[in-house]
Image (cartoon, rainbow, N blue to C red; front, side, top):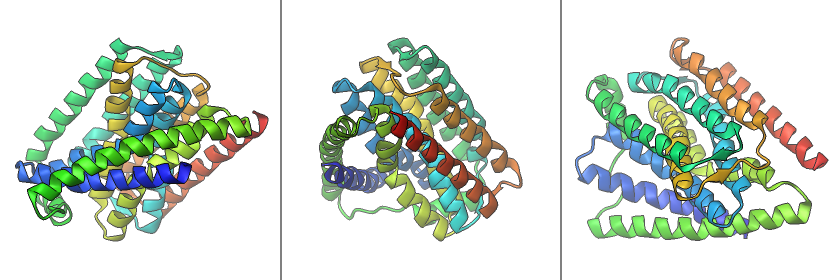
Length: 312
């Protein structure tokens, strides 16, 4: 069931990326905006499916753990591996401008979770932040340098031939995500019950890595092609959407308890975000050393998770 859920989540995310990016381009959005927002959101839809399913099932640990763990995995695993494959040179000014705001959004999410509950009022603030983020990127996209726009124009293309197939891809993606999310959450709960491991640990590790597969695939392909801005932009955008859209939307529908997700997990998420920020400004380049450091940090985090599971 877990593997079936993973496959459905991956395929659903991939189909939604193809359909949504094609539809957005046909509606007149620039390839830069599609790459920075539409694709970033679509690759975060597995997290949305798992988080909503977990909230409705009353398994808040998996919901919160999935969001926190996915942001940690995106920075430590995905960005680290991409930089290790090929150094990432960030040219897009809008990505560099987004990084301090991502750190601020992360710190606000940590503050919201400190008392153990994220309520509807805090969820509305997070959704308002999402609107500001999209609006800011729309304004910044108009002034972005030509070389960056050409990179996105070359990489972000219509991937579906006809309007009918475009919407079929979107609908199929949504259905696959819904089914995959439900199967994944049920399997995660069974695994936790069978092994005696906290559902929070399952959400922070298995669920987080599984739902980050679309970001991982996008980052590896973009890094190998030398499309550094697409690689970095997708990761930064996905982390924004995880915090502002997924956490915000879910808590507006149903307030979330932090449960067994520890403050240490939140500090790791904030710490990795703060660690990546100066990397973006040190010559606007993430080399293999920085990539290795990020992977080392993520490996240490997984080791800590394993010790928690053993103690649990």
